[in-house]
Amino acid sequence: AGSEEADEAVRGTCEDASICKRFAVSIGYWKDPYIQYFVRPAKERKAPEINRGYYARVHGVSQLLTAFLKKTECNCQIINLGAGMDTMFWRLKDENLLPKKYFEVDFPMIVARKIHNIKSKPPLSKPIMESHSGESFLIDAHSLDSSRYAILAADLRDSSELDEKLKKFNMDTQLPTLLIAECVLVYMTPQQSASLLKWAANTFQAAMCINYEQVNMADRFGQIMIENLQRRQCSLAGVEACKSLDSQRDRLLLNGWETARAIDMMEVYRYLPQADVKRIEGLEFLDEKELLEQLMQHYCICWAVKDRCNLGLSNITF
Ligand code: SAM
Image (cartoon, rainbow, N blue to C red; front, side):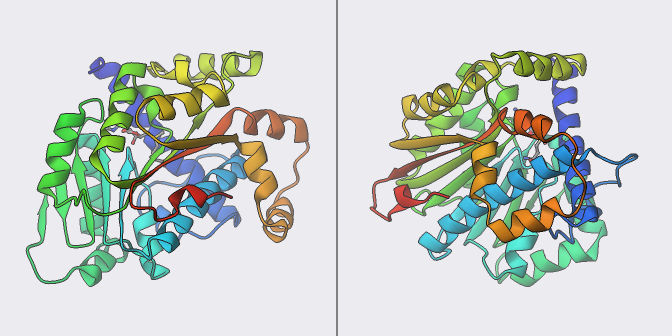
């Protein structure tokens, strides 16, 4: 594990992400009635290119996730690694698209904060109770386990601890499983993220992994991004794998995944439905098209599949 200061800085990134998401939602980029219960409003406006970047990120991840749910007819589980204040569980419940079980994992401090919010805000707790049936419902400061939703504290740098805890919460290794890591792996050393990805590839018969994070970090703009993050004392131990789209893909292929693809966010942006693009581009005036493009070329979505049951998971794409 890293130093306590570095871990604290990493935990701070969770708040940043949610504040940016809440701000973009408040401007109308996408709908998320739940994010307001997890994080305070932004102190100042976020730049339009940041908001568009978040739109592409949220839309991109959710497009692949929805494709996985449709392919498996929701007869699956989702594990969100480093979930922070993510609201996907609540949004899927509203859309009637819940998997058999939705798991979230993060550091104890983040999990405690999330559970506190859930406990004290009925719009968050009600959907969990509504989707719960029968058996025992567990809730304490660092974990919550219900039939369809569980959140637990674990350090992702220790995959045997992770495995043990998820099994205690009834993770089913026989079910098709989607693992999501959104801006998480970059904070781990290459060995740590490799062992996490290997664990995931070896644990399930049928699985898909979605990873969203930085890419093309070797160029000038990438260096500036790294310096900005370092100024905030964030450990960027994993930036090595963020060198290129190829290095992102290779990491997945070298750690047990059968097929893998990686595309930068500019490409994701081009795949967005034209009506959506027209709508969001009308929300705010964007002067610096080039800045948006540069930013989008420095983030990517990678997805990998292992499909021993021939469910057709490798056909999932944009
Ligand atoms: N995935 C969320 C999102 O996109 O909104 C949060 C992203 S935030 C940038 C990174 C999250 O990963 C934080 O909540 C942090 O606490 C979590 N995280 C990073 N390293 C971790 C580790 N070793 N174990 C558990 N959680 C970790």
